[in-house]
Each structure stands twice: as structure tokens, then as C-alpha cells.
Image (spheres, rainbow, N blue to C red):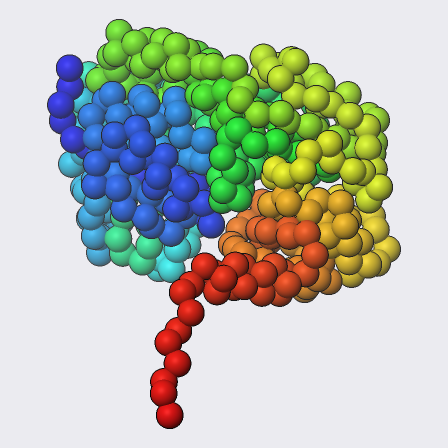
Length: 404
């Protein structure tokens, strides 16, 4: 088995870095470090395969190849040539370069960055083999990330290939559905224990419910994928990968929680049912047509996760009144629950009228959002705190009085 500890970067959404850190630690990654919209770690091939199969909050996982500084296009080209490209993949593989440049005087146009990078890679292969890999911008076997900031460059290989949020189950959607990775991350941030009742009352296409069910059933999100980016690397160990994939299948169990996906719109529930079937979770999630604002949950406690309309999905005329109504529904009918709400209407969130126990800034696509978690008590929270103080006081022995 390969024991080399390479450096990897797992990319994620802003706000989800802490849960990705835990996911990577849980699979045995070493030297895990939280970055901005990413987490770095070290590991061998087994760690890399596990990360791609198991991480619910990673967008992609990059293998670091080379970091350098440059002064001009000639020095950039020479540094790119120093990478032993022929050791990482064969000349019959197709390639694409994903260029990113910030504050660069040389690479004002990222197309130029991509072209110069491809020239250096192609020349490396021509020098050794007399021919070069073909470029395929749509479905390349090898995706090479070239990130430039000022005069510094990081070069990496994308081990995931197709983005990891593409689980394969969501083929039917409504307007602007929430990303699978964001949905999984928010569930983790909510503190759900994987066993308590879970209600998704504005389910749309069912992403929250499906991600929750997969987590409760210990279903690895990448266990059914046939191909990853690393499948085309020279270092690919098929036996080891198949062993890890089978191990993931063996760890799957029955969903441990009661999960309800509901929405007021019937056509969205059709999407939800189709996606549940695609995920192999038929019978594990109850699908119901309900109006959240009149709905009474069949449980005394549990978790409720809300993705109310905002952005493209916003059709409500009075956004403040909508959030006030959400708060009233939670207070009056979900006492005993914990509630998580994501919204881009950050100012309107105060009209919910509840004090969040947790606030996490996140992004939903380009939209700046907040994810608030609320503990819903029966009666006023201040009254609950007073009662708890009384109980503590009752249990204390009486203080001795000083004699005058």
C-alpha cells in the first residue's frame, strides 16, 4: 500500500470549513488545517479515495504539485516545465487547465494564463514522447488547476473530476434548488443527532431530506460514482479504490430517524419523490403536502430545517411579514424543536422574533446568506431560565446565617 503523505486541498463553501475539518479528521486525514473556503490535509492514496467517497461538504479535492514565484512569462513557463507532468498522467489522456488569477499584472486575462500553462505541459510531453495530450475543455480526463495571486502560483491536480456535489440523485428540481453540499453542511451545523425526527417543511426538490437520510443511513455520497479524476492518474490503484468503495457500501444501514419532506406545491413533491427514488431511499422519507404556516408536527421534539423563499424564489410581497409569520409558526407549533433557517434576507431575519443560539454566515451560490439555529422552548425563554435557576437553588443546602 502507498504510504506517501501528499498535500491536498479540499475546497468547500464559506461557512462550512469547520464541518469539513471534522469530516477529514474522521476518515484519518493528517495535519488537517482550516483555510478560507478550503481545508488542507495530508494523506496517502487511501486517504484521498476515502475523502472523495465520504466527504459530504467538499466541492473538490486537489493534489498540490508545485508552488512558485515568477517575475515574467519566461520564468512562469520554466517553473511550469519543472513539474514532471509525464509522471502524473499519460500522453493519451485529455487535459484542461482551470485558470484563476487575482491582482496579477502579467495575467490580466486568464485565457493567457491557461494557454501559457498548456504550452509548458505540452512541451514537457513533446520532449519525452514526441507528442502531446489533447485538450478537452468539456470532459477532460485530467483537470489542472493553476491559481495565481500577484506573482505567486499554486499548481494542483483535481482528484475529483466532476464536482462532488453531483451525487447523481437530483435530476428533478424546482427554481434555484439548494446545493447538495450546502444542504449537508447546514444540517451538520444545526447539530442534528441523526436519530431525532427531522422535518423539511419547505422541501422544494427534497435536498435537505435526502441529505439527512443519507447521513442517518451512513450512506457515503460518493460510493456509487464510477469515475473520479484520480482514476486517470498514473498512481491510480484500482484494487485499493474498489476496496474502499466496497467498505463504504458495507457501512450503509437503515435510516435511523423519521424524516418528513413536505411542501405546499404538489408539483415540487413530484420532484422530491423522483429524487428520493433516484437516491435509493424510497420508504425512508415521508412525503406530504402541507402548508408550513398551518402545519402541526406529529412529534414533541426534533429538528426542522427551513429554506424559505429568497432571491429567484422570492414571490412574497412583504418579506418582513413572511419572516414574522415563520417566527410565529415556529413559536406556536414547534416548541421543543431546534430550527435551522438559511436566508439571504438578512435584515428580515430579525422579524422572526427569536434569538438564535448560532449564526453562521454562508453563501448560497452568489448570495450572501446567514444560517441561524434556534432552540424553541415552550413559553418564553426567560421563564425557562428562571425555572432552571429555581431548580438549582432548591437543591442547595440553606446558607448558615451570621449571628448578630
